[in-house]
Image 1: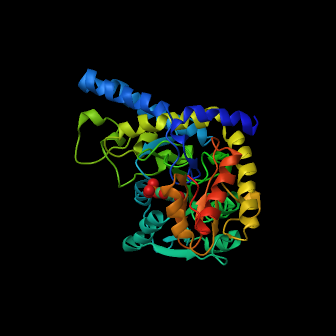
Image 2: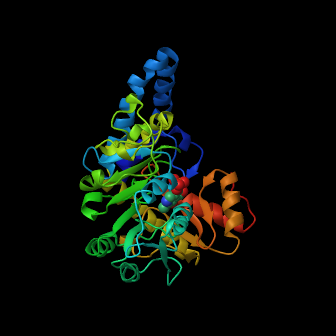
Image 3: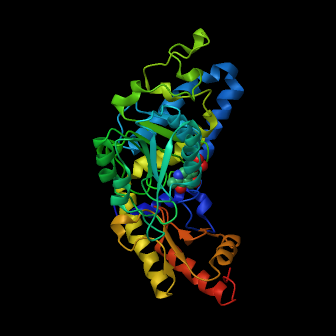
Length: 387
Ligand SMILES: Cc1ncc(COP(=O)(O)O)c(C=O)c1O
């Protein structure tokens, strides 16, 4: 598939009209089909009352299976949750810490809410080791591997870092973790939907992410993958009646976990978010990660060229092999310019330490990138954007 063919998908995203949309690493554009699917959710509720669950419950399964395909995961290994932070809390509740094995290893560039959850495990007896970056943008694979030892319980890592877009060497880190009996928990929020992801090939124990960004699904539809052989091995303390063997038996007080992946569910799922996220997950699956990555590589290279032409500071890897879907760059006054760009519907975002982040996605035209940088030039020279 060529870049031009992917451009045809713009018709599915009328919200692109009148914008330069380069913020899919933060909030993907709303697909047209989302309105239709949300309508179906509401109609079931309005017309069928309690019988709506006959529609809603299968959708909980279907949402997980759509994500499983995007992760290249086998059926029955994914459940839906509301956000990565709560998934991490659930996973943390799977582990016990002993004198011999109590270490959690993660990097300083784990997404903040993820870092907060694992750091708090110190209150339960965990010993947290944080691997620092030597350049402010990447995490050294060897430094991660060196920190993982026989005492290590879990290693939460990001597939692509939220600040710089750096793609971590997940396989090497996982191989080391496995050799000492530790579990890698992959946060693939910044990879799924923009680069091909195969959680089985990567060998991780768990993977999580959400639908807000490249999956164009809005908030509330996060997911958890558990490696098939590990599913029966844990009993999360963060749990609910949907994780029970026979939820409608209402037996108490103890949880009796179901054997399926639903043992990683909690209480009543947020069904409306799954209807909302359906369109984006479907479209991503229809296009395919390879075609999306191919176009992204060409267009992120164009962004890097524009950054270099202006002698801005590039804060993402120059090597496309280790750069995911967005490019970060900085210059004096970038935060104010980013805000101004947003007011003119040139959508990007800004993060302290790395500057402006921009992501072309499958619906981006080459000219959008050029228009974006021309708008930066105009704002910096005080000429406005011309819009
Ligand atoms: C790598 C990464 N993990 C997690 C999140 C979000 O976590 P949560 O779903 O808890 O809001 C983000 C972005 O918002 C992210 O970039």
